Image 1 (cartoon, rainbow, N blue to C red):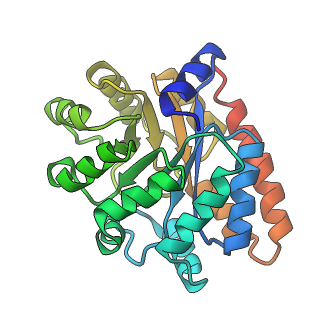
Image 2: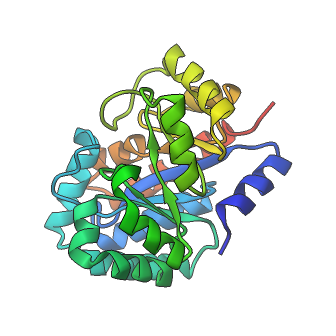
Length: 268
């Protein structure tokens, strides 16, 4: 199982940044979401970010909310998610991170959640609705089970708070490119690029940028500003949503899109 440190080191040598696609387990159904994960890996994903479906995903926009709804209607539970991850881990050594909400962890039991994540081969956990000030129990479990704890850094995060987050986080910094929820955007704002430059100067970890990254041009712009990689979610889930009546087309379209996005991570 490759660590984030190893991934970023290998990519640096190849003059590339990281492409980390995001999907929700069980969207559009359990079997197809497993095929989608493997399609992403086979077409250039350097790491994966995996969402556990949740009924109240406050950090997510309509696209991912609908993916969560489809998955929940398919009967996806936390236990089924861990079974999915164990199966997926057998097919790839690339880093796999989770994006989850704290209620799922709390209901499962904090220590048991991290233990199950470790057994499933998970590298990192980002809890979208848990600030570092309230993450004492999660941080303790992350250290005990050797899992990187990721925290979101927003454009409004001060340099002082960024330094505090750097003390607790490991793996990478997750930068939210815009204020608001997830969802594909038309362009990268100039303020996002200066935000990346600021975090680069004041943070201690590699920078992954998410929320709104949906085109090759977006990836090129954030990399030029100093980012070490891009997290792409809603654009992939849009492909799923538009082709629900044709599972084969979903896989083909995602393969083409992933290749195109990975090509954009090559540094000049």
